[in-house]
Length: 525
View: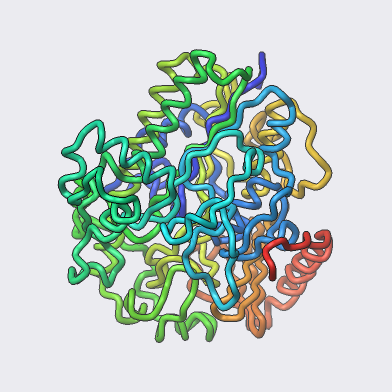
């Protein structure tokens, strides 16, 4: 890999996306994602890439800081990353060479969704509800970002002044866009947002599956907001409007996070009868932990689930699950189309030959694995293994890497590609050796931390090439990822594996014990 001049970075990130919902990882599904796949064809696809926490805010904070959640302090949703925290984006900005921007979801601050048993942050720069807008902060730069245009929330339930102002401008330019929602420009902002947020029939039976058929047109949907702002930024940068030699830009889509609500033509694009359910959908959890059996039988409250708004797993029908996945595919297809338009713009504005393109997500989704959906302390592969694609100019093309890597490795990789020293506080490893030779191995194991406030669970997971071991408060899980790739048989209590279990536990304890002290909180709790 020969770097001839300082590189730009286009960083695509989605929210809660399974790796096997991309056709470059799974060509058996009806969903095809040719634009995202093109990044893999022109770069490197990682097949054993993991998040370090399967919850939005903690893992996004890890991507920004290069630190584990127990160190940067955002251990679950609802806790703000402290202002003043040093991020890799700060380091790029302070170099004087990079213009830094983000369009879409950021989620380093709390946006307003209830989260667990503890109090949530009382101030934020990312609130999604109009009633909270008076409490919005206005830090600039924002964790190193010089320019931000934010949309918070998911599906039609989105908000933030940046997004509402964009909606108003779109309707001003094309009044017909407001007609399906009965939005008039004379309406106050809070009414405009209300009309956007309640643009679906609450009596529709699909609502109980969090599948929402709404009236928000594609042109006003969050994916379009992200796409259009990113393309406009690339155009401005290409004509010299940003006064810096290079850029880092996040193109950050709130989808395909639930509710499952693709707009317009995307809602009916995929038929439930064409959906292939995960192989483990009919798992009755006889060989699972007691905790997982309880969730299967009663639907525990966790991040993404709440009693009454989704069926108990054992009662979820195949038809219901297929409706959910079909809607998710619609959102993901819209994202793929948007990625294609952004990549076309990168070429159109003569920026592609000097720009690193990254595609990843903050964490996966249970997605029907073991009859579970959403996320929570159920550390199956669909939730913790995530897509990671990277294209480097003059780098490897159409290569696949099976080496273990994780989100914490991303910021160090970007800094090294930018020719900037990696600070000592970062705890990952640069992927550069792999980007030169995909057979290289930089990690023997991956640490995944999760504090679940809903169920008083604090889990720690270690992933190796062969094993997943997860330690809960009063039980454990041990799965052989080579012989039991679908994680059906929890062998924690298998006495013939006691030496292997002990070795993995010692590695897990050593890994967690070597972490530095957590940061002091600034959120009032």
